[in-house]
Image (cartoon, rainbow, N blue to C red; front, side):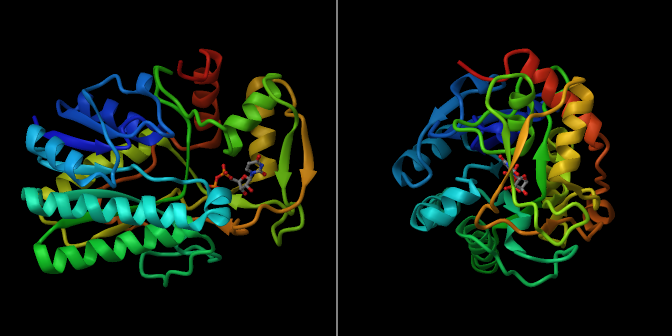
Length: 325
Ligand code: UDP
């Protein structure tokens, strides 16, 4: 059994990672300031409340738990907010990660799996891990900077890291125990479910004049359980001293906003009320993975990431309440 510090363990992906770690026999210790996450989502191990920028609190928690490795999810991740408030993203995501890496180095903790994003690529057709960064917003920029920071810490301090560049994460765990809940919600699938079930007004479709077959943006959706499976493989890969450091996590298949809306309607058996709206600043036209490096190196493939599987599991969670108290 390993002790794994999970920053952001109270959030959507972090809480699913904690559940998977526990299932695999590990102890997930959540480190979270609960600013965008939920105490009630921390069900699989202890919660240590703290901010990533708080070095003394981090030192204290690392000394207490002596984790074997860190899964680093904690970050602000709203593209619209990042565009309006870049300073917030640079301070929290980059400054917070720097504080974490310095605390880990001082404590002699040498393994980290980092949540990066396909937003590092910007407007780019089927990027591979070698594709040059060109982020369109401070969210992608902040994640690209942390990847660079990890490379420098690797060279200077021997810190071993794996960065996963997520495409769009969707769905909920098979038991519908935990799921995707943001306040305010900004993500397409939960918003579409809420609109279709009368929990909110019509969904706005951000941009219908993109250069895509139906005019709406295209994204590559991955089931959250597939995504966290890659993290467990990443931990093993670090342990085995794997050579690669960066992996795209996507299926290589994209769906437009209209296709997602249609599928939500299909699974629920009722149309999703929606209206056409202007483009959202900071959005790329299409983000679809162009790599199978994760398959080659980690043996990872997306097993549950068809659109009906992801949407059905998200709906199951919403039908059980779809939120935390
Ligand atoms: N989107 C939309 N209406 C919404 C929320 C999202 O049309 O109310 C679109 C958004 O412009 C993007 C896609 O849905 O093209 C996925 O957005 P989401 O915020 O879920 O994830 P992101 O791609 O920003 O990580």
